[in-house]
Image (cartoon, rainbow, N blue to C red; front, side):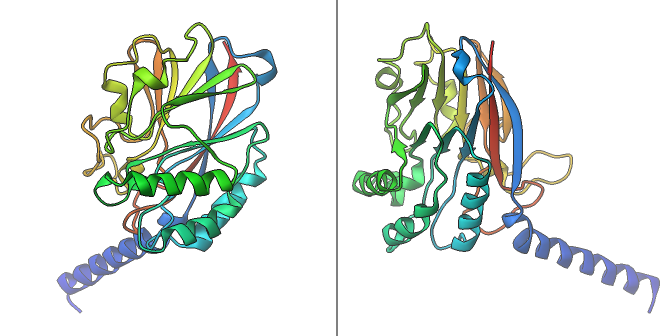
Length: 276
């Protein structure tokens, strides 16, 4: 074998291995990310408790049910005090309601609260079917998840504000924040991180938890992800300081649309609430 033939064969072997890894390994190689979540004025009784975030689970034809169930079991084993899911509970298909009812029976419950918001995929094809979203909300409630649609829910003095989806034209900060007492501690849930750049946040100060991007799903080493479904392309994954004393956190998601990830592992995020 010549040197050129050897190098060609070696390159093809490495490429094949990379493709196999990105299709067969990383999409199911869950990472549990832990970080502090400092909240101004957090009630003393909540200091040190945990808030667990899941996002973009995409129960449907492309995400293996056994994998999702294993993620739910791993999350439950962490014994979180509060659980939130930030949208795209499903990827719509003809039998998604039956599949969701079956899989979400295992959804982890928070000791104090289990809350969620909708994402664009929860509105079905073209993000334009509110009747699909209504059915998903009903199933989620039956599985112990309180879905917030431009409304707030209070957990022992902490306001958790849930926004409806942007791409479905349901995002309405005037309604969601209308009953929020801005002198008291609050956390926001908003599926699409582009919402943080829109008007309506003028009086909100605190953390905003999002998803939607999947972290780009595939990211070359040392380079940004080439495909991110947001207008502000710096919003990929992790923590971002924003104007107005706000902080954004983007979860990389549990599921996927295409079963491929590279250098962007799926994520559970465990926040430790801290009083500041």
